[in-house]
Length: 122
Image 1 (cartoon, helix red, strand yellow):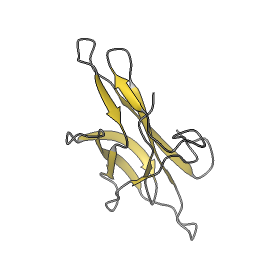
Image 2 (cartoon, rainbow, N blue to C red):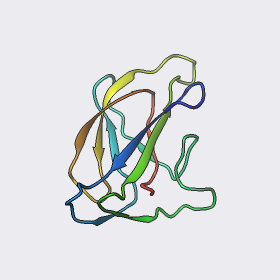
Image 3 (spheres, rainbow, N blue to C red):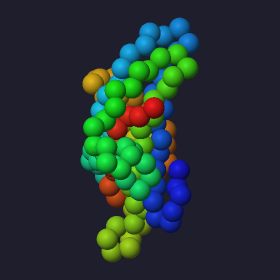
Image 4 (cartoon, rainbow, N blue to C red):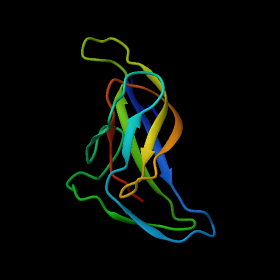
């Protein structure tokens, strides 16, 4: 996703299989940069240019994740540093669902100098 010049984002979809057991997600996924540049740890922010919680709401919702009922979270950044120089393009991100230690490598292209993750929502 890239709705405006310089802004970059990736939406993560969390789901369970059709035969999976429902569970709840609440809060922020952990996101670190993978291949493509120096290590970045995503800052947790309730909202940003690309999405997140609605204005006036700072409490992440509890989302019931079940078959046919996914959840999503957006990580975003800006493609240029403060001097106008381009940022590295990462080709993978390391993503950990909230309240989990199950980190997965996700293929995603995002050119950014910093990462900002928003909470899981429906």
